[in-house]
Image 1 (cartoon, each protein chain N blue to C red):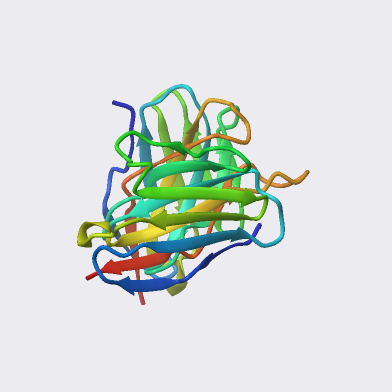
Image 2 (image 1 turned 90 degrees about the vertical axis):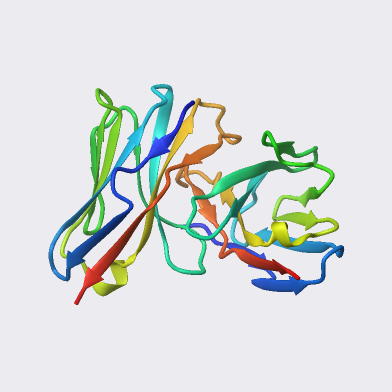
Length: 118
Length: 115
């Protein structure tokens, strides 16, 4: 399957600071990537769809000014949590679909980034 | 509202036995379903998928069954091993806006393999 990476794998920051998380597709180009958030013992909740070269599409209830998404290239999407607060502490996971011929339709996920805001 | 849910939140199975994880979905427009495995602290890992025009698909030690009549999806794992212990999620894709489709995840089932 396709490989998706994330960086950093974990981050601890002070309340009020901003944190940037990177998502990369390593062996394919992804015009669309997805950002999810997962709280402990809960399922994945889609936050936004990241589109290369255009604005991201946010799910209802997700603040676009707080969770800034940039998809500047076909292999990189970034999520910036601005003015982070303790309630933003969560596991953030990105995914991308492999569009290559013969590639499966499914989304492949990165390893996740655990964010802890103190 | 539309949702994808699981019947059993936890499941314990003896090593070597078969396990079945169930999932109910409510959106009849969903055309594609996926099972993911998530180990602690890691991202979801693709296991197997099935399109809505199929009712069964087999992989290595795994089988997915789809019953569109009752909107039910199941994952069968044969000859379970300790490494199968994880949380399993079903996910559905609604619509066919290929390349920009969204997935809706179920609540997850924690599978524990007993040595």
